[in-house]
Length: 422
Image (cartoon, rainbow, N blue to C red):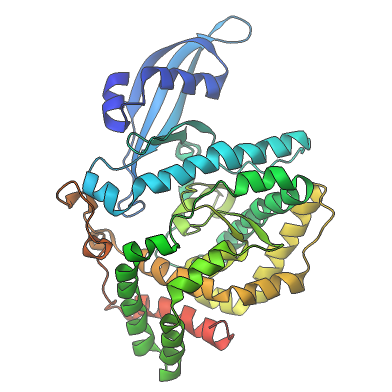
């Protein structure tokens, strides 16, 4: 495939010069000449509504530091807004791309500089190498190293995670959050400049008309599961949460600031964590997709993950152990950065209690979407025309017929209600 053909797939701004710059950034070579571009496998249906994915391998030659010619080959994954304009506008793809590019160019770059200036040996670097970005609201793209050929893969999204996967992700989240807390303590102005550059892409008054009707359908599915699988008092508690303007509560919770406010990932469902397995055990984890990154309480990530991604029986039985693991990793990571402050377990538990409705509210949608089979996922590229359509008209969800799928939702609600989280 030629550079021009790849450009037609991804973006008019994804030029041959961008490819040359990508090779230079990845390899450090100069006087680069592209030799071959080979397309890779497509993404799994349902893993992304906001973007289109293109995987390819770049082969090139260039001169190394010794002036000798060197051949290189490496995989790249490029993400760009859908070509279907109606789909792009319906899911507001360009806004999500803008926020993710802000994350990489302003937030993550500031985090990397902070770690370099602090001369941290064991840096937090569990993100793929970012190779190129562009945003103008039309021809946007994000390109990074594709880690899947290295053996990284996503865990099964339809079933709750087991202890090993859960523990691994909790440690990664704690390390990522600790980086914010240490940076905020030691360089508050630089941290605030980076963190406040992020834009809310999901929970905002300006987005209520976009999301509210779809959220009503989310409520229907959740109410149906609770009504069929649990005693009446649980439906009463769920209705009380919903009727108290849950979307408004989520808005307020996501913009609240406090000692435990950090840069959060925002979309911590299973496909955004890639595992490199050691036999049957998960090893190193790489985190992707920061389109919903925001400056908010660290519990927005913690609760969303525990309530929507983990086996509910595991969460119920091991809650204290899981929170203790996250807390211990948070403290160890803050110490690594030389942070003088600390976070007590009591303070963390109080924060969890304060924002507990977030875990339920965010999980209501995630527990539905993560259980959809491929043939239940909407044909989002089948939307006709060039204008946005109501989200609920294409993101179609219905009550689950299967008891097993209803129970995943019901167990989450029961646990939250029994613990007075709702």
